[in-house]
Amino acid sequence: MDARMIERRNEARAAGPRALDIPACYVDGYNAARALDPDLAERYIRYTTLGDPLADRAVEQLAAIVEPGRVHGTIARTVDHYDDPPKDTPEALRELIESSAIVPDWFDPEIAMTGTRAFLRNSEMVLAGLVTGAIVEGFSTLISKSFRIRSRIILNGVRRLKQNTLQLTEQFMPGGLTPGGDAWKLSLRIRLVHAQSRMLLKQSDEWDAAEHGMPLSTAHMLLGAAAFSGRLMHHVARLGGDFTQEERDAYVHVWRYTGIVMGVPESIMFHDEASAYRTFRIAATCEPPPDDDAIIMANSIINSAPILLGRTAPAERRKMAALIYQVSRDLIGDDLADGFRFPKSKVVRRLPLLFLKNRAEKIAGKLFPPLAGMRSRTHFSRLLDVSDLGEITHSYALPTSLYDEDSRDW
Image (cartoon, rainbow, N blue to C red; front, side, top):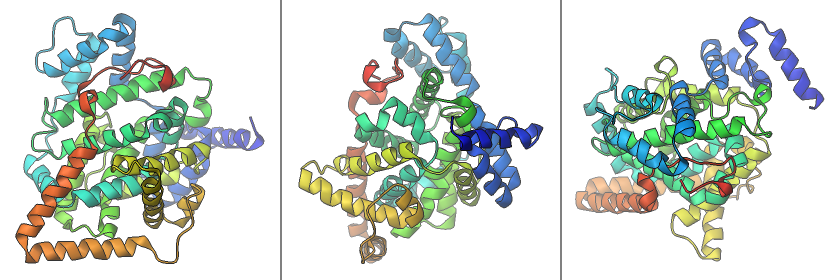
């Protein structure tokens, strides 16, 4: 343990009873965030040491009483019959599924439909903002360590991007988040995978709980939901998207519900686009600076994106990766891009050109509605193509080993 690590731990212990549970690597960021919003910073830090009690108990019970080869079937039967689970369903799994089927009183399908229409109209820019901005920024945090240890992005970068895109698409389909709907099922699957990964990571010698807190913590689930909603809306606007404020809030409304299904407590969840954006900013400030794990993850995302978009020839991949690097740098800023060791910017910035191109297409669509309809269908069809995971979409199998290359397929 180096001297700086010891110093940070001592600072955490000396800060008083409420700070005793601050993981050492968060001390500096927490102090900076507290100067901006002490209440939000404290709520975020409190959850860096907590997992997902319901999902954690479910996977622990599954591991104890169900053979790995039967896990998929056990979970699938429970999810498919969430309103009347089979009598042999493990108690903890039953509790998780039943609680996830309770729709919050505030969720409004009409507001969600407003978000859906805006999403479909801007699907290509939402995907671009997701890949070049929100996902990359998400991996600037300690989330990157969990994924790097498990080799999840390094070995399966394209599939990870497909999973993110699939979740994004399914939750904006009408009825997708209704209990029993495809997005609801997918969110539960992701929640269980996170819980299983958390259980495996806690057993790893590479994870230091006193230094790093809980792997895939509740705080990180909140940060991810805020990044993919309020922060992503910021990126989409810079890319030329035409969401109105009502539509931006509707988009976040859907993500707010998704976050609840994925295990984020209502007490810390954001409410609208402004609060989601602020949650992301304060959470990102709390996080430690990007380290080698973050560098590995961010660059893996950028270099996987061309394959996701169908550019498989080496020359095409390199050309598109160079473009994505430049757009990403424009979106996330030079400081973070430099921390990730992204290539330096060229003289001509790519983002303003993309903004003008996208806005010109929007104007042309308003002047010629059939053209807008055709482009919308083309963009949405492309989104479906890049999010096609095949049969894995319907799998509830869970990882069986810390290192993904040693795990059963899931």
